[in-house]
Length: 136
Image 1: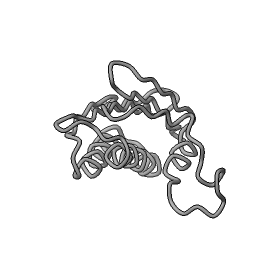
Image 2 (image 1 turned 120 degrees about the vertical axis):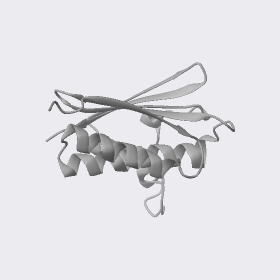
Image 3 (image 1 turned 90 degrees about the vertical axis):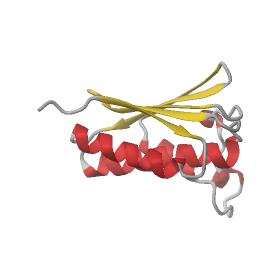
């Protein structure tokens, strides 16, 4: 049997979406035969993205969040689209850089530390992220 190479999921932008995103990643990782460490990293990234959208992005009522996962030779590609406020995480200043005693707000630092590449684009009222997770 050939492992799954790609999947897509759509979630309503509601409180249960982080858990749904994490579950979608877990299903894909199992079907694709990803190592447990890569699965856990990808789950954490998906959950963080969705949680940030809900907490800070203020997506319009009834909007959706799209997540696409694709296994590539260099690793796992996560493509994430939300309809929240414009936010470019590649320009985000770490709270620790601004204030070494700051508590919280380190999710993007963790995501960037996991990913080998993060790309952001804003088009048609959507935040679009492409994140590459090495499979090692």
